[in-house]
Structure formats: C-alpha cells, structure tokens
Image: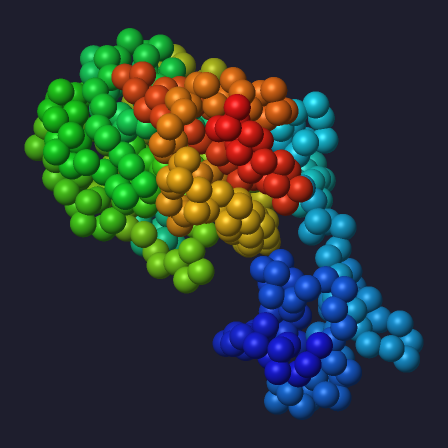
Length: 451
C-alpha cells in the first residue's frame, strides 16, 4: 500500500487529548471496519509510515504493538505488517436464521445477532460484581439505581436533562408500551402507517382503536397526522421519528416542532420509540432534536441484541411514579441480572455500535446497489435503521412473498405494518444479512417478480 493511499484511508486521525499511538491504532481499526483499509493489505514499513504521517517512528511502533495485541495486524520478522480482521470483530451481525446457513433466509424480523465477545465479556463482568445484588430481595421495582442513573446520564449528555427518578426500567420497548397503555388506557391511539407490527398488536391488545397517518420514505403527512391526533384526543400517539420502522424515514426538526404543537393542542400523550436512534448510518450525523414533552421509550434490542430483554421509559417523575405503582409494572420489568449485563454493555456502547453501524452501512449500500435501477420497484436509501422499504410497481407484495418462499426467502408484506391493512404493494427487506446472503436476496426478489 502506498503512503498516500494509507494517509487518505486514515483521514484526520489525530484526536485532542488522546496519545498519538492510541489515536493512530484506533484510526486503523475504524478504517478496516469501514472498508477503507482492505484486510490482507500490507502497511508501509515503520520508517516510511512515520514520515508519511509526520510522527516519530516510536509512535508508529507503539501503535502497531497495540494493533498486534488486538489481532488487527500480523507482523512476520523481516516483512511488512499485514492488516487483518480479528475473530471477535468478524462476528456475524445477523442471526443464523437470516444468513442462509439454514434452509431459508428468514427476514420477517429485522434483528441482529448478539455481539458474542462483547456480550460474554459483559456477562462475566456482571457476574463478578453481582454478589451485593443477590443479597437483596430481587424485586425489580423501577429498576436498579445504577442502571437508571446510567440511562439518565446518557439523556443528559445528549442534551435532555434527566434525573434517575425520570427513568423506569422495563423488559423491552413492547413492555414499556404495554405498561403505558395499561396506565393511560387510551380509547384511541394515533399511529403511523406503516409502523412496527408488534406495536400495533400491543395497542390493539390494550383495547385502543387505531387512527393512522401516512409515512413514506420522504416523511410524515402532517395533515393526516393532525387528523389522527384529533381522533386520539385524550389518548396517546405512538411515533418512531428516528429511522422509522419500516420506512427508515428521519423526522426533520421542523416536523418535530409541529408534532409537539399538535399533540399539545389535541391533548395527546406522545410516546416516542427510540429503539432505532442508535442506528444512524449517515457519514457525518448531527444530533437530532427530540420532540418536546414526549414520553420516550427505548431498548438495546436493535443496537445490541433482542435477547437482552432490557428497555426503559423516560418521562416526568410523576408519571414514572404512577407507572411504578401499576400492578403490571413488576411483570413487565427486566430481571436484575439482565440489567447488570446491560450496565456493562451500555456503560461504553461505542465499540459495539461503531462496528455495527459500519457493517450495516456496507450491507445497506450493497443491497441498494444490487436492487438499484430496476423499474419493478422503487425505494430510497435510508439514512439509518435496518431495512429497505420497497414499493413494487407491478406485482402485489403478498404474491412476491409467496413466490420468494419457493426461493428460500421469507419476507413481510406491507399490510403487516399497516393499521388499516393497506400498503399491498410494499415490502420490507432488511439488510442485516452478510454479503453472500444479500446476493441471494436480490436474486430471489428478481425471480419472485418474474415468475
């Protein structure tokens, strides 16, 4: 690899307050994960590398030592250092059911596999310090104080001042939504069309009638949203403004302000699902504002693993106190040991999130490239999230789903995401599988739309 190519791949790698060797090693790791440095390529000799980057040879030696210790480069005596991907960084991002290693590729749920090395390490750390917790009664209450403080501090750091008493820990976002429905007992709930199908099931199970507003990859229909919020007067609205599931749409700051004003006018409690917020795949993302006065629900199910059954509600302390007293609070709470593991993972989530975002960005771009330029469907490349939202121009989605099954591909048609059963020509196609599976997905869609 030439000096200029390496310097270009690393970009502006110096970081204020970080030792040069540590910053350089981190830049190499990020470049490998982003695909800017190909595994198997050879790095320039230490003296050349030091000259190209304008640093001392000792700094280069220290950085390479860090990379060797982590398994990111291999150096043989008398030869150049070779870039590699350590086994723990090569873990799958998709569960086995979505990789093609079993009979079919099942994409009916857009979910990641666990980051095994990080998850197992977090579990071991949690086990090492769980003894004081085991001496208590094990009742979850509003959540472990340490975890509530951790989530509150994260909101505060992101610009939303939050105290631990404003956090209630649940066993996921579905549990959070179910508890809010049980407490608020809405007769009507405003929802997006399309939206996450499990949320529709929770709201219907709570006895709410659903009023929908249209969302496309271009954004929210504010006239329809106004109508839906008016219909839900005194009830609640369930919204996903950040990389909306399944469209991938990102709500603008202006629309967020309008939504807050409409909800206040119609007396509606806004329940905002932030499960996808961490999956921002833009190259240079800016902090997205939150909708004023919304009750926020979140979890680590998409960013980490669906099997980590830990979620939370962020709201006014008065509401959190009322929810804690609800009879369903304890059954819908997360087990204390799960919270301990979550503390270890979410205390420093960047290593897992950075790798996930880099992989998802590559896989999104690959699938988008495979499907682009075909007049049998239209889609927009989403700025984040886990899936493409296709609008089929000819064949109905349920027909494509049925045909795709014969080609070892399971998908979900649009009506599954629509409160009113519409969207019969839409299809959600997750890009969580690895490259080989994405190739198969594109080929199966081609055959399903030609059969």
